[in-house]
Amino acid sequence: MVDRQNRVGSKFGGGGVSSAQQTERERKDRLRALALETIDLAKDPYLMRNHLGTYECKLCLTLHTNEANYLSHTQGKKHQAGLARRAAMEAKLARQRGDTDVMMPLRSTASGLQRAEPKVKIGRPGYEVSKSRDPETNARCLTFELHYPEIDDATSRQPRHRFMSAYEQRVETPPDRNYQYLLVACEPYETVAFKIPNEPIDRGEGRFVTNWDVDGKIFTLTLHFLEGQTPKE
Image (cartoon, rainbow, N blue to C red; front, side, top):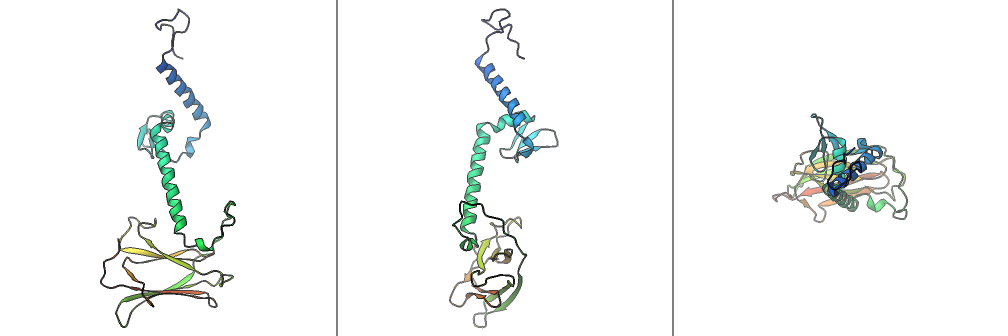
């Protein structure tokens, strides 16, 4: 309790006149106490307790003496602005993943307002990779052959592929800009990625070929590298 007996302008025993600063401080204390009773800080992804017994905000990189002080920080402008920036960044990444999703053409948009049911994966497809050189240009050549024997309707489901830079993936850190990844996806199999040199690929006629064998359920992709050119960044 705050002693208000001896404040200027107050009668003896009347409790005194509280200043605007004191009133605001008491209001924040009440809100902080109420929040501690209703908010589960154990589920806060940005709260971390260090070896010194103090608390850190991983979003704002600030230190706090106790949970109440951290909770007061979460209501401030700096933390709220950080949350807004993080939400905007995640929304942008989600849109980028949606734009570059190799399985997007196979998904129906009719049930956009309905929650999609989780799809069961049946493992990785069998694959073979062979290296060779073009007999005329001596350019390096890679051939990828993937087997999808468990696909029910091979006529309506064709494997999709795309190239991904080293900076998009989150498996190998730090990313090596000397390599890129070839992704091949076909439901209900898991998406597989092949690590290949980050060098220009020849897109000329007959130099980059894909084939989907409906009867054998085998997907083949053959590519040639452009020799003597600077790798992409």
